[in-house]
Amino acid sequence: MAVKRVSHEPAYVLHRYDWSETSLILEVFTRHLGRIALVAKGAKRPSSNFRPVLLPLQPLQLNFTGEAEIRTLKAAEWMGGHVMPTGESLLSGYYVNELLMRLLARDDPHELLFDAYAAVVQVLASDHGTAQAATQAAGLRAFELLLLRAVGLLPSLDAQTATLTPLAPAVRYALVAEAGLRQADDAEAALAGSDWRALQAALDDAAPFASTLRVCAGINGALRTQLRVLLNYHCGVATLHTRQMMRDLQAL
Image 1: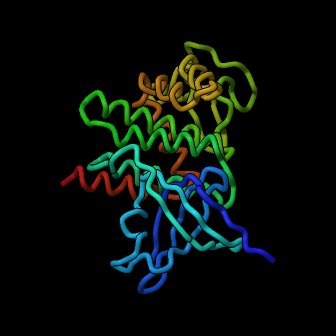
Image 2: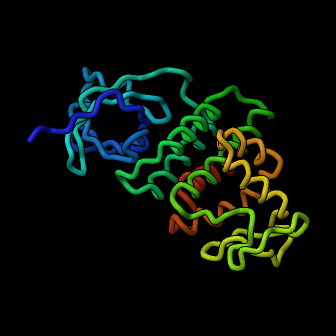
């Protein structure tokens, strides 16, 4: 039986593990195959062509073979387009990678989510400054929403989940794990129905990342609180590792 070969597959490295003294196991997010595992033989050798290429948050094209759980990497090419994010932007990129590692099953393609990932990485790699920091924060919220929807963990945002009653624009609603959207007990920690409906319309847009980013920019603070609780619940942790790292660095 011929070994399956995949060529010129768009991908990003999410995480890497030592496999031997000279090789690595890579978790990568590919456009057409989803999250997969690859062995990069000899990647740790000083002379390896893989060493300067297999970096996180960088657009790659990969060639690999195999149909087992762990395929074999044959070639990797950096596609360029932006520099590596730095500082807090780099930690934000690692945070996005951690979300994908925790919430995406292997071999489950999500082409639109891959495009959203490429877009949020591009935002994180952009020039810094107060305005750009706000854009990056909105980009993270947009990606979180698109990820939750892609894996089936986001209810419709234009109706109360239990009753399917349309949201009243001026009433405030909270997004609750396992309960969906419901009228909020604490109005300060929730969003107005008009905000949730605007988010749903943006998610349904032909360019969902850009549209959702624009909506998130005006409601980032309250939305971040809502989504953080929901993401931690579905990831099965009190605090994601990258979030805790950010807090520790800010405390220093």
